[in-house]
Image (cartoon, rainbow, N blue to C red; front, side):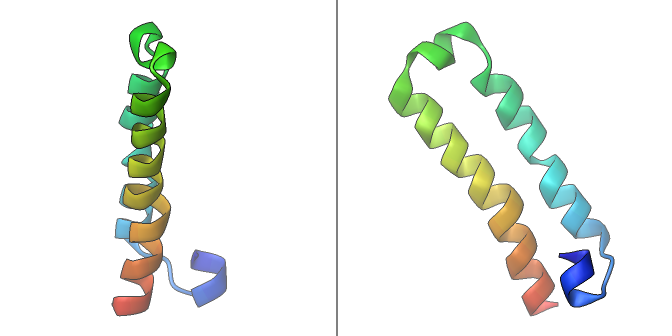
Length: 60
C-alpha cells in the first residue's frame, strides 16, 4: 500500500503485524484439525490485516 499511495504510515505496518498472532494460533495442532475454526481465523486475519490497512490508507 505504501508504494501505491506514496504514503508510509505506521498503522499499515501495525495492521500487517496484527496477523502474526492469528497465524501462530492457526498452527496449533488442535486448531489445525478443526477446519471451520481454522477458516474463521484465516478470514479474521485477512480482515484485520490487509482489509483494515487498505481502509485506513483510503480514509486517512
